[in-house]
Length: 338
Ligand code: SAM
Ligand code: SF4
Ligand code: SF4
Image (cartoon, rainbow, N blue to C red; front, side, top):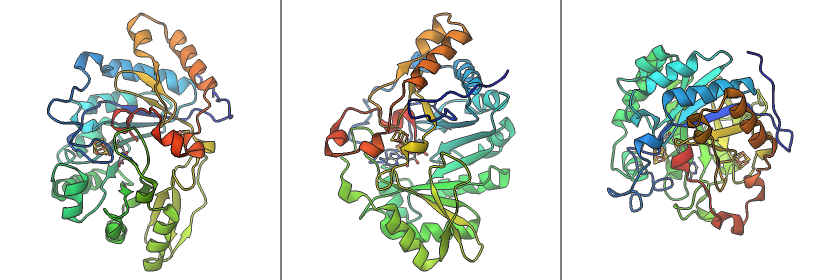
C-alpha cells in the first residue's frame, strides 16, 4: 500500500515508531526504575492490558502507511516479554520497514540473539553503563555483573545483529570515570558507543542538573585519548552527534538532549505497552489506541486517529526545559522506552 507522509505543527514528519512491549524489567537502574519504588509489591500492568502482537503489528502496518520506516522495540526490558521473536517476525514482514532495531539491557540476550536475527531483527542497541563491575552492579540496581551482558553482545555480533550500538547514560560521580574504558572496549570490538546525557525523564529519579555530564565534556574527554572528528549527520532526525576516530578505527556518539536539544528534528512516536500513542518522551500522557483496536475500528479510523494526534503535535520539551518543567507530571521511561 502507498505511504503518505504526515507532518506535525512544526512540519516534522512521522518516521520512527518506538514500541514498548512491556513495563516490566529485570534491572532496577536507579535513574529509571528505582528499586525502592519498584519493589516486590509493585503492580505492573496486567497481561490483558498489554497489546497483543497482532494488535502491535496492526498499528505498525498503519504507521508505515503514514511514513514510518524505522521501528524500535523497547520496554521495560523487551526480552522479558515472552516469545518476543514472534513479534519481531511479524514486524519484519511488514513491507516498508527499512530499519528494525531493539534496545535491550542484554541480560537475557545470550542464547536469544540468533533467534532474533532469524526472525528478522536488523540490529540491536545494548544499554551498558559501565564495564567496571562495581559501577555496573550499582547502576543496574540488582548487583548483576557484566559477564552475561558481554556474552549476549558477543552472540549478537556473531549472529550479525550489527552494527551494535552500546548506550551508556553518564552520571557525574557515578560512572563518568569509566567512559574511556567503555569507549576503548567498543573501539577494539567494533561496537559504536553512544554516551547519553542523564535526563529528567519521568518523575521518579530525583534528577538534578548537577548530575548531568554535558556531551561536549564527554567529546573532549574521549577526543584527548582517541582523536576524533565530527561526522556530518546522515539523515534528518539523527539523535546522536557522531565522531569518527582519526585512526579510522570506528566512531562514537553523544546524545545531548539536555545541553543541546534536538526537538527540531524529532520524528518519533512512541507506543506504550497498553496501546497509548505518546508523541514525546516527556509527555504527560498519551492517546489510547487500544480502545479503537478492541472496539472494532477499521484501519482507516485508526489511521485518522494517528493523523489527528500527529497533526496537532507541538512537543519540544527539551528545548523548553526549565526548573518548572522538570517537576511536571511526565510519562515514565520504563513505561515507554528510550
Ligand atoms: N530496558 C532496555 C534497556 O535498558 O536498554 C530498554 C528500555 S530503557 C528505558 C531504554 C534506554 O533509556 C536505555 O538505554 C536507558 O539507559 C535509557 N534511560 C533510562 N532512563 C534514562 C534517563 N533518566 N536518562 C537517560 N537515559 C535513560
Ligand atoms: Fe530496565 Fe532499561 Fe530502565 Fe534499566 S533503563 S531499569 S534496563 S528499562
Ligand atoms: Fe522529541 Fe520530545 Fe525529545 Fe524533543 S523532548 S526530541 S520532542 S521526544
